[in-house]
Image (cartoon, rainbow, N blue to C red; front, top):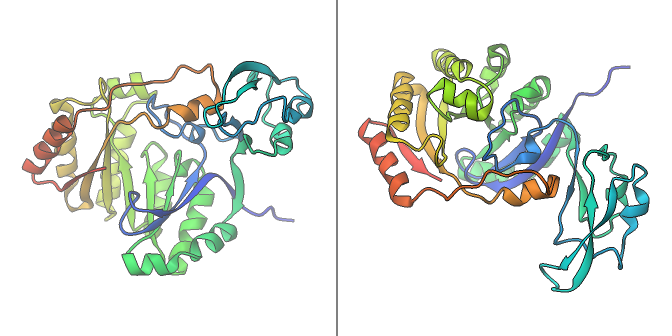
Length: 318
């Protein structure tokens, strides 16, 4: 018997207005080959399901504590006593030993306040289509559609291709949010079913790219050129990260690269760094060292916008 194709998803967000034109539904897939220190969705990086703990939902060991006995690995133990952020009660929290946890989900099943939960759900294409079809009226009214994001959605190439095919079959505008770090074979397969690529360009210097993100950028740049040559459309996204790529030189080189792609680039999005994802790291591992920086000044980001616009490019800031 043939196994039904599924994809591992960590979130589905409706009424999204920053992931392509119009009102959209964004489907976020797990798994990414890059390790951006500033990533605001750390739950997207690994493919496997991950146990997450939200302290604000936890009501404490005295009132519950069912997770302590539900875990057969001994990974959930008594943690620190602290004041609850919402109720301001002094309660005893739990602690998760990530070296023992195998993400089985038994503790999450026992947690009735849903402070513990498994991040990552397997969906069939049909289930995703059923979900996003509920918003077709919004897509039609606003010129929106569905965006497949991640992680890196082309790390799950078969599922992403099948989903894009089905979306186009029922007439929904499609966008694919990609790092560009993947086999061009996977990009070539989805090209006929992708109306717009949301394409990340993090740094033009390959050595700096590899030193910080973990991989060089030659494949990313080459894939962008091949998408353009094949007639694909790209909305280039540039995260503005303090101390990494926030120099006039890098922004200018990014602009030169985008101009060389011609009409394939519809416009450039500048995405100033923010630290809203820091709490997500703490949910996954409270001991993990997290990248934090002061968000770039508005004046600096505006100067980058002006620089790119003076090069004849259309630019927005999000």
